[in-house]
Image 1: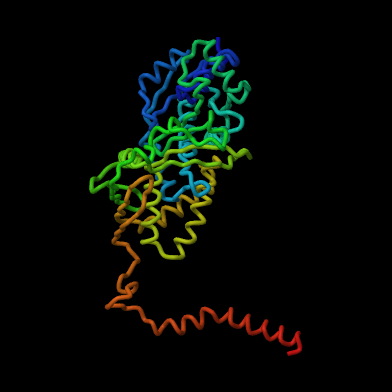
Image 2: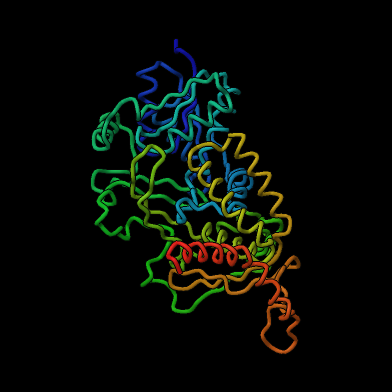
Length: 406
């Protein structure tokens, strides 16, 4: 008789496939494999069959793309989340969702523990375990890969010994994580920072040499910071992201090669593909420039960075993130309108924008006939604006003169 049930976050890859057998042998648990489709293009029925074939006692499979997009990606988009100014934290955003579903399935199944396939040197172990304990402090959390201490080559050998089929080998040992917000690739030749990422490391984006010679334009409509239409067609957020991934990838948009400061204190090289995310974040930011006041725009940039750091650090369920989310929602009430983006040869540039909430006044901005700006008001403004600096200079110059005996 087993010691109880454990719910394992199951991806179908090397680590979690091996973990099924290991959890049964090491802990004598009945293993419930929780498989999620979040945009990797997984065949859910095949994923279920594989989990059971590897040895899971039960498999629970959930299509979670809509949940991911509307409850996790949208708040990140409203916050323009780019870690270290580059990475749209696609992997980090799926972890609180996976944690939430792990806890829910564990409670439904009467499991005493949950498990994940993270290593001891990655960020995800922190994200999972902090989130799980925030949602249910009583659940035990097990990290098989961290506990068994096998290196990647040994793990592959173990999988072969146990007749576990995994989509990885010693010659091409990339570790892949993907959802609709982006694809992450690490390990293998990428671990040497002097190696250029080979084309085989990319799947979503074309090399510049293979992109169309003519640019393509996309028009994105936002309502309160949420994308609601693409090229004039009303669509849900999942469809908008997936279509932008396709068109952006075709034009080579979205490749990121980043030496990343991980939460656990080491640097790691990650190669990302985030065409849809980068297009949406750029478009959203440009619409904010048009519709938010200077004070809100500048202060929000600081809050965007804080929100990004919290999510990256695994603190999605923290009180501060909840408070920041409320601030973000308040700022988005006027972020309505359309943005036109030009895609060409790996670049994406906002070339036009329009909003009923626009704070841009052409009559004030123009240098042509019809200029309504009060130029005479500038004289008094400059005098008052620089008055404190002027007084400071006068006082200190006088002190210097006295000191030098002039």
